[in-house]
Image (tube, rainbow, N blue to C red):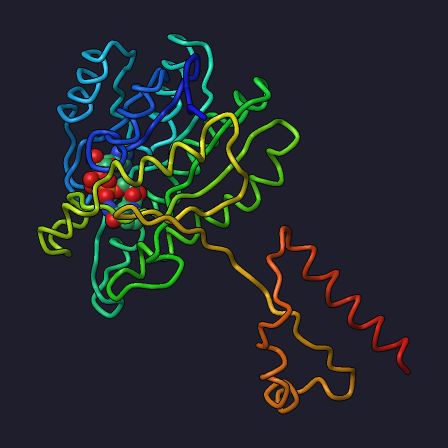
Length: 304
Ligand code: NAD
């Protein structure tokens, strides 16, 4: 099956370099009109330049595609709104939003300043919130929207020196989980990508030959399946170096402790049962956890 984006309009944030650049080029190659957003700063978020995003626009135009660049800082809602307005003025719709822009300010938690923590949260979390908020009503009115969050194994599993980045990357999954519920009736599907790629973000963290093996294009192949017409919903796709997998949060079935025994000693005693993964499930709303506990309490009462 050929995946086509003919007639679709996509905004890709942070598309001047690395993964975003690769996503933007492939979306355009497959027919999408693309907004190449990039602030153009350094890896730590300092500075700004339009050179990289303009180069991506030129590459798209050279292959016969349509693209515009916009230098909005995703952490600034007014600038993001301006980008969305310009997109609507030019093409009249926005079908796809790829929240990809990101920075790093790595340090152990002991040494990390709160300013470095806040800036990383601002770009990754508020950047994603701002862009999503700015397109949300448009997608609702169109009854069509595909949104991708960019998360990271650092957020899902932790990484030394990345408390700020990890917290931010987990936060975008929390945003996804609720937007999936709120967007469903308007055909807005929301997924997340957990990439590993050799880009300027990782080039000094991996040996050169590994950087080459982790080509952004391999990740982009997965990304495209998260934002076309037949996209799934609420998936976390992990992709890197030609490997593809999916990540899910499961919750154990747990146990019920009756009143009178609800103390830390009993909880510790039943720890093996609480953490037993045999009947674990992936829940699809917070309410399902409450329902599970109520059912356990009712089953206990019935057994008396
Ligand atoms: P990159 O540094 O090559 O590209 C990031 C781009 O985002 C840059 O062009 C930068 O100018 C832009 N950007 C940064 N702050 C911005 C802002 N405030 N507004 C607009 N644009 C901004 O990095 P990359 O490796 O391509 O990373 C892309 C995304 O993938 C990021 O969200 C990153 O956290 C995530 N990620 C990457 C890896 C990896 O292995 N490379 C792993 C996990 C997650």
